[in-house]
Length: 206
Image 1 (cartoon, rainbow, N blue to C red):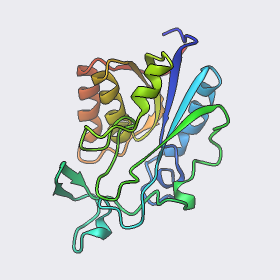
Image 2: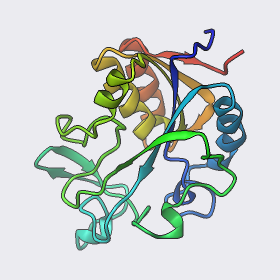
Image 3: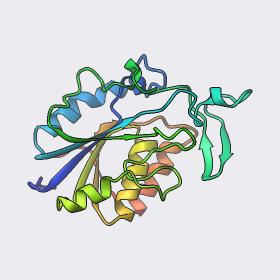
C-alpha cells in the first residue's frame, strides 16, 4: 500500500511488561520497537494504546485464589484468560518501552482500567460493546485507513483489527512490527480470523 496523508498508524501496547524481562513478556517483543519507530516517521497521524490495569484487576490470576496464570474462567462477558499481574497503573511495567518514540502520537488510548472487565481491543472492552471512543475520534477526523503494529499479534492486535473491520475501517497489519504470545495455537487462529475478516496482513511496508 501507498501511505496517504489521511492514514493512521495505530501502535498497540508496546510496554515494558510485554517486552523481555516484563511480567507478561512476549518472546522477542522488543524487536518491534525499531520497526514501529520507522513506521511512525512515515505517518502524519499516530495513535498509541496502553494497557492500564488497576491493582487486583479481575483478569489477573492472583485475583482468583487457586487459579493458574494462562488458565481460563467464565466471566459475565464470556471466557477470560487469566494473566500474571501486568501493566499496573503508574508502574514501570505499564510504561512504554524506553526506546519507543512517542513524541508524534496525537492520542493515547488507555484500556483495561475498569477493574471488572478486561480490554484487548483499542476500540471496545471485552464485552465488545463498551467503546473506548477511538472510533468516534477517527471518524470525526476523517481517518478511515488504519495500519497496526505492536503487541501481541494474537490478542490485542487481533482484537483491535477485527473490531476495526467490524466498524468499517480499512485495516492493515504490519507483521514485522508485531510479535505473538501464541498460547495453544492462538497465533494461527488469530491469523486465520483476521484474514477472513478482510484484514490485510503484510510483512512490511515498502
